[in-house]
Image (tube, rainbow, N blue to C red; front, top):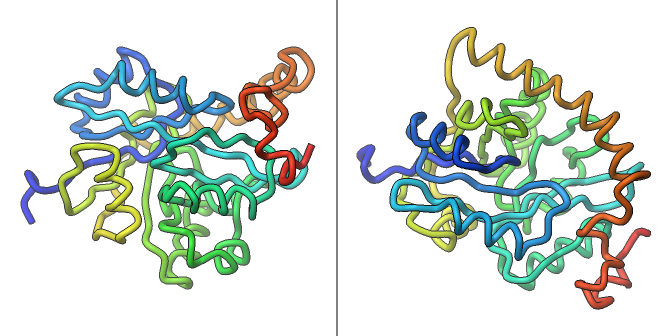
Length: 254
């Protein structure tokens, strides 16, 4: 396997614009997986297509918030063909991902109250394609939790910058031992368990950038949440939005 046959993928970013694309290219990335919070799949797809070119592929994805605000389990789905809302049951989300033959991975396991833990992954092992073992936003002890889960349950791994801030893009990535030319190639690499390495930038600058990104959690869990819950009204990805045509009423948690 040569470098030309490998693909460097930042498996989870929340921000995307011209500056992000330039940074990704400077850092030698081949693919970004773009999965912003509370944005519907058609809009994500349109944005991903606009910023993809011959040098950088942007793959649309959804980080779905299953469960209620008090009991959340996040899942990252790559290769969705139809929109899937947030705030549905974990089982309901997994069934829908399976119906669409999407790749399903576990981001930031055991991060506070928003993530799947060892028991969740073990219960759903047959439909989970990878567990995140390095997330640039997480502290080292948090990443070690994901590493232990992946090792104990023999689940393939992945890593990402989980960039909510432009400067974090490309701080961590997954290098797949295969060529990824389009979305379906990435789905196949994940579902087939293609060999890969999880890598990140070294040194003090990486540690500082990780701390800056981690500190953004304070905004997300204070003003950001206040704005979503009290000021902005119903999220576009709420299952009761008319766009979902009542298809998820039976698994909605609200």
